[in-house]
Image 1 (spheres, helix red, strand yellow):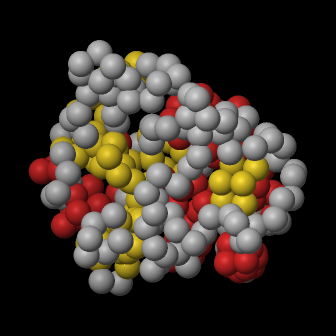
Image 2 (cartoon, helix red, strand yellow):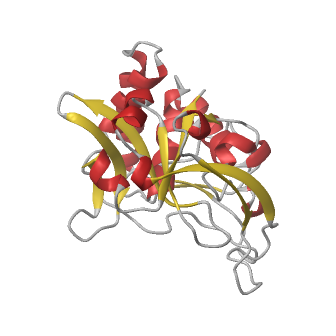
Length: 251
C-alpha cells in the first residue's frame, strides 16, 4: 500500500495508510493516551519514538502548478514533517483527530492548499492555527531583532512561486550567545529553528529541545551523511554550527 495521500481538505476523511504508518499512528496514539498532559513530556515521549526513522527529503507533494496533497508517511521524515507529526499527535486521541490536527498544523486555516502551507518555521507562531509562542527575545539580552522578507530571494525572485512574500519580524539568538543561561530557560519540547542570514528564509533546519540526564540535546531529522535519520545531537555542539537559534514554545 502507499502512504496516506488526501487531496480533499476534509479533516474527517479516513483514507488508507501504508501498514508501517498505520501501526505507528496507533502506537503513538497509545503512547499519548498513557502520558500526562504536560506538553513537554508528551512531545518528548512522542518524538522519541521516531528516533532512527530514516530521513527523506521533500516529503510533501504540491506546488503552484501541482495540486497539494495531504501526505502522511512515517517511514521517512524530513525536519519539518517530523515536527508536523509530533505536534499533531500531541493533540490527538484518535486517527480522525490526528488527521484534523495535522491539517491545522501544516496549513493556515486548516485548508489543504500549497499556498496556505506553513512553509516557514515562524509561521507556527504567526499563522492560525497558532501552535507555539516565539520566546526567543526573552531568553537572552544578546537576542537580535530582524525583519525578513520571507520567500523573497536576494536577486528579486521567489523560492516558492505562488506563495506571497511576507514581511516577518523575528528575533534570533546568535550562536555565540547560546550558553548555559539560555539552555537553563529552555524546556523539553521547545521547538528550535536554526536561524539563517540568507535573504528570504527564517531557518534552514528545525528540531526539538530535550533535556536528558547527560545534558541537552537537539532532536532532529538529520540529513547529514553520518546520520540520515532522526537523532539526538548534543545541543551546544549543534548550536555552534549555525548562525543562531529561534525558539518556539508549544501552546
